[in-house]
View 1 (cartoon, rainbow, N blue to C red):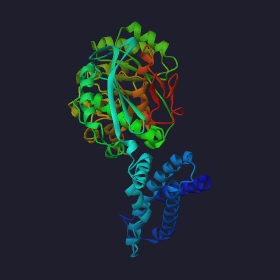
View 2 (cartoon, rainbow, N blue to C red):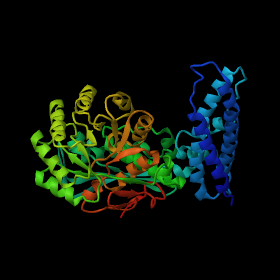
View 3 (cartoon, protein in one colour):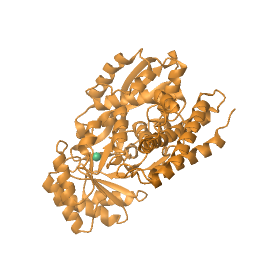
View 4 (cartoon, rainbow, N blue to C red):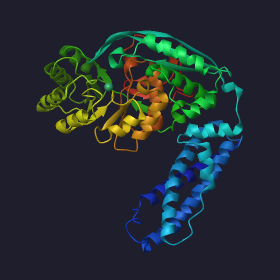
Length: 486
Ligand SMILES: [Mg+2]
């Protein structure tokens, strides 16, 4: 077997070199080409040539059947890093060469090859390679099954619009011709967006008839949103598709999405309830550094008292308020002011007012000075563009948009002035595991709100992520999202 490890160290160094060169000020646009630019040109050219050579070696290693399969996922991550470094380097080089009156370098052959093979994530590189290897009848969808997934709760999960007293979810199983099965979960939350288990089950049934006989790899490559009136049903099907796909590829879901991180630290929710309950729960959640308090379910004074009780019980904790759109602009501003008068400044105010008005969210943000997150307002990638400049964070949830669109939302928001939060509905470890893979794979999520399995009376799944206190550990996940029914 061929080891890539010696090459990997020098490949990583090249990525560093490219980033260092690119970090130097790009003054070619403002000034005529000068002495300093001319001195940098050979270094840029040399780095680009070495990166192109390294990328060619890495792609050859992926295609080489003697490469250790365990190394391939790591090499693919390096390919993505090197490609991400090389593209802007070549752009800069071309501008500088033109400014210097030199013949621009020819387009990179290896980048053209990778772009034929790959999109943005490591998994897409593998997809491209599989495509080169030809179709495989084992990836044809053989069956799609959906059934009720009812789980009792230790405690009701109350938000401004109502409470959930049991998880009445849906489990989707997609089995391929190869025998591989992928699992997905729908978690309709009537109080959040009016979706019900009955609707989700019916929607899964309709989608199932469309899917049988189709090629899974082609569906995942297109990453099209499953058309369904029920967003949670689309989420269940798309999650099962990517689970089956990454199992077939032999990679964990978070590696397929980019493999940026291996663990996350979640908050825990203090749901709507009495002042005494809020204080008791704040003390009980001693291991959690971030407490998320549901507000907006009663009057403002009630919420002030509840948040104050949490603050007094846990003055060390980072606090998030989530109104689920249940406050008016005036009440949201009054709540923040009353809290500030008591020395309480939450780290984030999630969806203070109803979705539909970006101006209202922007006004709460301006008047309170708090960082505001959009949750109910974000259900598709176009919403990210609308959010820009009006809020500070977007809450990415696979249940609102489906899995594929959630990936697009996160990737659209990440390079912009929008922070990332990941959350869910009342979900088991299956859907939360898929979301954890999404957040860790793409990386850079400042707020993680994946706590609802802790509210369930039982865990219907084995495998998947491990959890100790607030820490979600993805290292036990070796294939897909890892969760399978008991
Ligand atoms: Mg929320």
